[in-house]
Image (cartoon, rainbow, N blue to C red; front, side, top):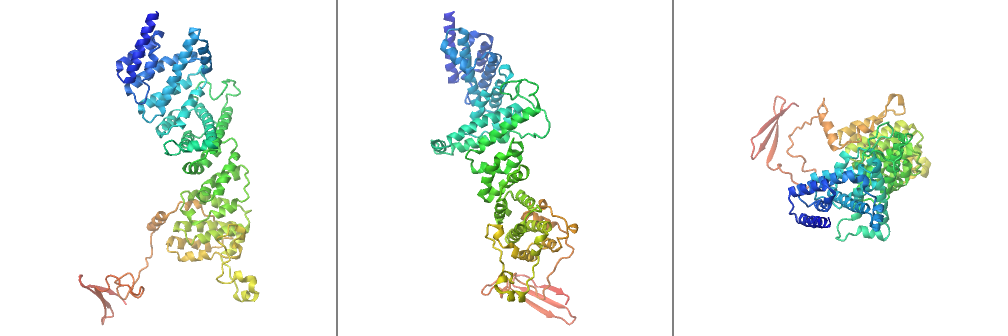
Length: 593
């Protein structure tokens, strides 16, 4: 018996060496798998098959080895001891069953590591990656007593987060196959919470320098890890916790760490509560990391839709959002949606909110990518009837001043915003037309210097709306829009000439109709208009150039010296204009006088 076992070990060792050299054929691999499944006498075939589970191994051999090993270990999973029990048994080393259990534990750990490598490695073929991921998730599912094997799943997610290469293909597989199961989402949040906390501790103090300075001087490693964590969180589908719904489970027990089967806890309410708690912890741990700028902007753009509604206590995000709002610029524009939800739905108090909002009104905001959402929120924030008159006047004046420098689409939005402001706040309608008696100004002297004709006391550079001087001014900028070069703007500004204090005769304008405007939309709308009257320009003499020489002294425009124009008045009362050119025949144009 000893001779037989030693010979078997020698043969298996030689086959293992041949597999590493790539000399095994497909038939030999199939034979190894069949013998492994038939008897314990061929247990040493397992290391030979494990050696084939490599991203660089031939695809057909790796697939055959993987299928054989999966078939071997699936029935043995309930009898595989834990890592701690296997270590204790290894120290004892007396009972053959304990020794076998230890050996089985080691080989199973090697299989799990190989499956993780096949799933994450960019060198793996799509076919082997798909099969490896399925086998790995089967091991996660087939735990003791039907419990979710979170330890195996955590190893897998740890490798995904620390992958240096793109993981888009793997994320698509996870999203389409497994993230639809509630317990998978639950343990995904649990593992990402632990990984993010661990990564956060490494990016503080001296560990931060170690993480940011790669050995090859390439891209920041910690930045790659943060990208991977965010991509995992973004691929987990958001759940509507307001609706009653059934939860699909990958494992038998579900997301219960202790495996309770109490009917009082096996309810959708209990599952929702635990899932929201894990969701909140995972996102909070992620937001504590040093986020790269691109990830930071993506989070701010979607946090009001994908994060806040699913959190157990959204008010926890107030510090993160207020700090982001204080940065200014595009970041403040993007964070406004989330901050507005916390203020209106969760009782957040932010005393300097309108001052920050006032500072965001710059020409660049009308060309920003997220201007549509920002302008709609701006209109909503200015809707309250409790808004002080000086604040409404300051916003109206700031917007009217911006109308002089923004594109035509921006001017249309500004007119709509001012229209709504004047209609909601009748106390600032004096800004539309403020007449100043010049004799009274001269009589009162310095007391009314700010009301003199031509004087503009509004300080556009003042950050505090209360000190801007808007209440002592008028919206003279709006009057200049009557002469705007864009016909759409010059026509639309006429809506402000109505008496907006009579609310029964006027309606608010929908900002959504204008917030997505651009040069293209303005041009397209203008082209589609049906023109009833077309303005024409009549000349007694046909112009030969776009500009006259008298307009630009010292310049000579082409065509003036090559052609002459002659006007002849005939006896019948008609004017004949004859144009002569050196290179073209004469043209006769007749016009009625």
